[in-house]
Image (cartoon, rainbow, N blue to C red; front, side, top):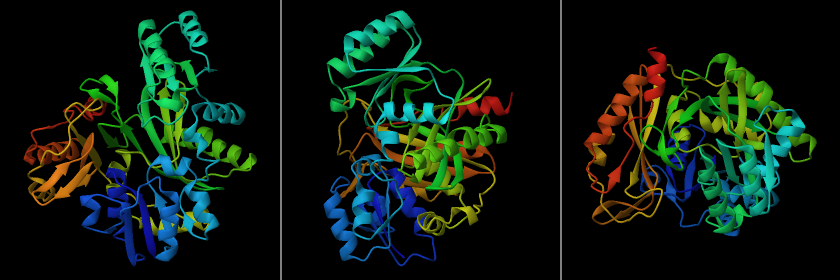
Length: 426
């Protein structure tokens, strides 16, 4: 099969790394890719939002399957454009991608499908939103309705924080048009997990669970980011929680989307809060998570490309997926200043040495290649994954790899997985 992956981050490097191992693969392209994907695939200089250019390239190169990584091209309608051109795409239609493109739409789907989620209200007027949080009290959650690169959600622990979030999103327009409307909802309390399912419009196949670490600072402090690290199958993702997450949240959503005439095909990412009475939906995303993708795929024993081919063909009901035993952890290295302003262009040394450690894989996220070497070219720059016999071994290996790197302008959280380790040893 001739495959094109769309994207340039750590998630896309991990997808390319997994697909490159498939005996079904004959040629692999990544658009635009990064220095990491260049080592295992052919990078194509196309922007992820250049849908017309991607479709033209796929037609010219007789691509059998396109796998979009990020949400922007999916919300922009890349799957529809490829389908019209007769090219298979593992990703939802533009209408189905509204599950991530609009927090309001997701809440409406959840209510219609009877999915357990937080109480919520929507607002298009800042003054009314301010009055609502004043009456409701804190803690409370304020969400920009549209896409905001993972930074449009504020868990306000005080009324001042809630008012500041409304002002920033609706009045200062820090997320542009994405903040024209907001969802304000009850603050759920528990342990958060990311549950992934492969969907073919009819069937949903469980595809791993992870715990992401969103806050930039250790001890879960500071602003939200795109993800500072993740662990595979955290201890609170029990068999019962996963079963209920699939039966009470994922599959009802799939049925509701089909009933609306917009069946969902692709990676469905359910962000869940595990409360005392079971899991509740926080949000849906319509693609693989990042850095969850870099954490889950190293544990996959099955042929990823074969599974994706079955999903595109509507044959997931017959698919079984095999997983490694043990633990997997990913630690993200970021440029100093992230998630605020950060500098690019600093050189990263020691990548080869760190990447040669046993059971360690370094996925490039925001890098560029120059004659002098690999340079930082983003906020989240590297995703360092390690696997092991258990989570503690995986984490130790990941941090050992990070300690082999020499990057003066980089930083990471040193407490990834710490809460999970405490829970395991309690």
